[in-house]
Length: 261
Ligand SMILES: NC(=O)C1=CN([C@@H]2O[C@H](COP(=O)(O)OP(=O)(O)OC[C@H]3O[C@@H](n4cnc5c(N)ncnc54)[C@H](O)[C@@H]3O)[C@@H](O)[C@H]2O)C=CC1
Ligand SMILES: CCCCC/C=C\C=C\C(=O)C/C=C\C/C=C\CCCC(=O)O
Image (cartoon, rainbow, N blue to C red; front, side, top):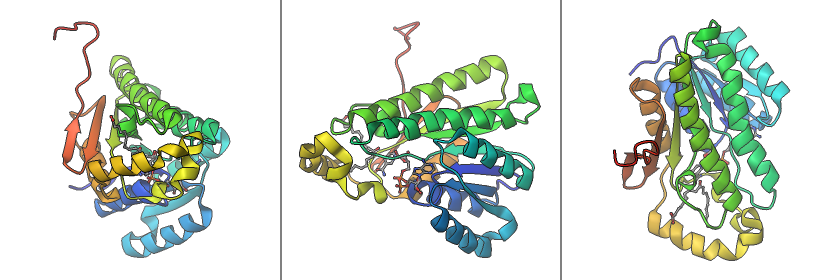
């Protein structure tokens, strides 16, 4: 499937799931702006990707999603370089229960900030041409990940924010679709230094390792393929797509207004 003529912004683009998403977008002919705090890694990755996919199709922007100023400037530079933004993947996230305020700031506030800044360029009621925004949740956004209560709260926030924005967009005519991807365990850097990341819950590291063993682990590319499906399938809006070793599943949420439906 071709995304030729489409432009994407990916946060947390240098490693893990973000990096896999950048590659699949480039493989499908999109132009991609990579936003990340890892400047040296971002510059060398972008140089390598430029050689493979064409340097005019890839742009690194040094950006901390905690900073409104840096984030706003990055969107502007992406628009200046590529002309418009059609796809946004708000993916940057950390897992650290010790620095829990930072976890909230990056995982939840960063997604909200990225969504609102993206809408300034994409919202059809403000001269944009619409598009799709995918936010990275987690299975921890669907059920409790007991060793990480704050991380769990941020991911529930991401899923709920995404669903509410999908609904707001439909009602308001923004022309932008919103979906959340909810992976299980993915083999990335988040798996390093687990006891430190768990902070006061470090005593649960062994039990969590058992859970990982039971549930299994997927690759960043499997997550990227699931995200691509929600990018390209124009019927998908307000979805939370769980991605697990046993496969993908769109989550059915309770209908709170008509509980028997
Ligand atoms: N690895 C896993 O098992 C799972 C991860 N996730 C979520 O997937 C997303 C990506 O995580 P991974 O790829 O696993 O992590 P990772 O640690 O491999 O990559 C995260 C990337 O985000 C960047 N980043 C971190 N803080 C940033 C900030 N303030 N501003 C901009 N960029 C920043 C990092 O430099 C890095 O390139 C996160 O939101 C995470 O919560 C969700 C479910 C499972
Ligand atoms: C000891 C290894 C821990 C590794 C943790 C690393 C990353 C986890 C990232 C997540 O986003 C969590 C992903 C999946 C698990 C989430 C919830 C499990 C809920 C299980 C249940 O309902 O009981």
